Length: 449
Image (tube, rainbow, N blue to C red):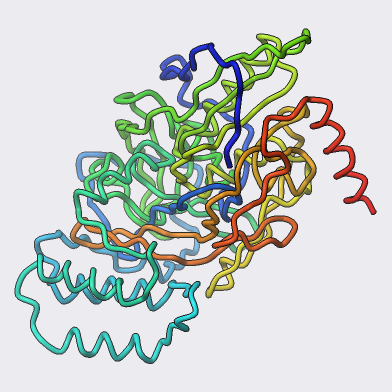
């Protein structure tokens, strides 16, 4: 969505690296699952379909109130009999089959090609019917296999390309967390995947581990997004995790050095309105990476302190990024219970309604995109958006390469499927603020019937 600001001579102020924030800063955000509406190019969820484990003999186990030797313990299927598989020991055939299985389990065909599981099964038999001599040949086979799906967003990532995905790491230590319901109806946090040779992986965190505390703060009942915020901190500083290995394993205290490679995607400045005493807080968001929400909150608070009464959120040429980050940013401006988006996919777990759970951070008029537009919280200015409404997940393969797979799509709160359609703006040129408030008032009247 193109937002136009005229007579803008003030320089953009980047959010500086926040070295003074404590590791346990608790930003007020919740839930991480779903998708973002708006002008995004793609959405990423770093995960791993394979079982990765590391022994950490150098880190002693520590006693914990979270476990007891007398407790009855049943090992989960997804954490049972885990063992590390070194990349050089994985066969070429296994890598190809791993990629095939990811598509078979998760791929959503958004075109009219009508993907067939029977045809996909036959492709596996044809490919794996002969020996694959080299790793390079295996990667080429995966590329051709994914290209046959006819989806421009489903693609192969070489190990070098996959390593660049670290800028989307929400934790800064190379893990992906998921919320799992326990037998008592509560929520516990488990490690869904790790970046191979990432900080947590090297320190001894294992896939399937339960995170019990971060720097001594109990994370029981917290969302994966909240826990990820606790894990974040300045580059090369340390964070201490208390983890339980599987359901039946020991509890360990593991110190992990952060390697946050994401750069701030937020730039901001204060704009004066002609013939008015009011000021506008202008914020440009270049990417929905691991720092996006936190840095946007900082920018808004600073702009409010500087006297901003209205806000513009500029998404021109936004690169897209993390689904979680986009959702949490939209929630900053929505009232409790208002819908951010609806997501659909092959798997029922991707068919969700995403809503805001708390009051908005600000209630001033805003110029931004669809989630806020459909809830009468914003107007859209500029040109029709590109129309990318699909959700991709990024899966790491055992040799450090990866695949990006389309797993779902999202629609706006007004049930508009934006994929290949885009979003039509309310104004082509930057409106007067009186027009903005009038438009939002009329929107609310129609919404209330």
